[in-house]
Length: 450
Image 1 (cartoon, rainbow, N blue to C red):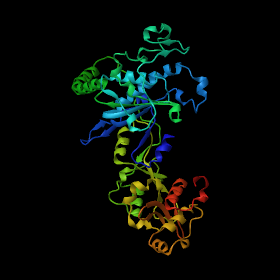
Image 2: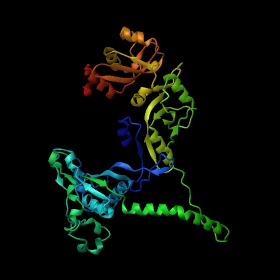
Image 3: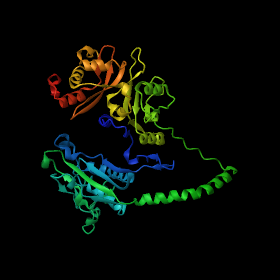
Image 4: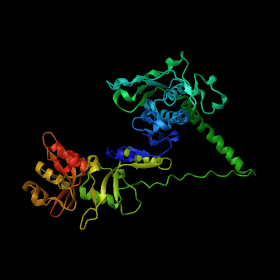
C-alpha cells in the first residue's frame, strides 16, 4: 500500500524500506570529502502501532475486544519506535508522534518517558496553531493506570507485585511539581465528536541537541581509532599463541530482494535511449536503474543522484522495497529504432532533457480527440486530426514522443506514440479525466468520473 501511494508522487527522491522500525539501520551517504557518514532527517513521522481504541466509530469490534491490557502491552514497542525516530532526527529537526488511540499509556506516557530520558535534548512544541480552527483538547498531565480487570492505581507503589511485569514505573505520569518540564499539555487530543471524525493523538517534538546515548556513542567512536593500533598488535601476538581460535561470525550478504542494477554509459540500452530521444548531456545515465540483471530489461527507472548514492552505500544493510520512477518501458514493436517507449509517470523528471526531434505540438481539439480515444487497439487515425498536426507529424519518425499543448492558462505534456498511420496518447484514466476537465471537454463517457 505504501509503495502504491508513494508512486502517485512520481518522485525520483523517495525510497521505501521494510524493517522493524525499532531497529531501523542507520543510513549512510557520501559526503563532500568522499567519506561515508550517517544520514539524519529533518522530519520524521512516527505513526506507531497502537490499540486503535479511538477508531471505534469505524471499527465496531473495538467495543467487544478492547481491554486495558492492550495499551500496557504496546507501551514498550511504542517507546522504542519513538526513541529510534528521535535518534534519526537531525539537530533542529522535528518528529511527529501519532496514534489512533486515546489511552495516555500509549501517548503521554510514552512521550514523558522519551523527554525524560533525553535530558533536555527533546522538547514537545505547539503545533495546533498550524491548523487554524482545529477542535481538540490539550494533552493530559495526570492519569491513572489500570489492570486488565480495571483495578486502578495512582502510583507504582500501589501496584501489587503480581502486576509488576505488566505495569511499569515509567507508565505513570510525572509528579505535579515536574509536570511543567515536559510540555505534555502541548500534545493534541482529537475526540471523534469534535469534527465528526475518528479519534487521534498527535504531538510535535523538536530535537535541540544530541541525545545522551548519542553523545556517549560519539565518544566511543573517537576512541576507536586510538585502540585500533593496539588491537592490531595484540591480535598478531594471539595468532602466535596455542589458544583455540574463536568461531568466525557469519557474514551478512544482504537481503533477498530483486537487485537494483544501475546503467552505465557503456550499456546498449543507454546508447539506444540517448540516440533516439536525443537526450541532453545533462542527463546522467548513472541515475537509470532496472530490477533485472538480464540483458533484456523490461522497465527502466530514474532516481536522483542522492538516491543513487544512498542505494549504493546501503545495499547490504537496508532492505529496499521500492525506489525510482518508471521512465522507460520496453516496447518490442517491429522495425523500431529504440525498443523503449517513454512512461508518462516519469516524463516530468526528464522532459526538459528530451530533444526537439521527439516532440510534437498539438492543438486543443486534437488533444481532446487523443484523450477520448486511448484504446491501444483503436488509435485515432492521423486523418482525423487537424491539417497542422498532420503536417507536423511528417517530420516525426515512428515511436514514442512527447505531445505538448499550451495556451495562456495551461501547459500539458504527455507521452504519445506515433504509428505509421495513427497517433495516440499514453495516459491512464485518472489523468485523462483530469486533463479533459481542465480543457473544459465533455466527460459524460467517463461515468463515475464525471
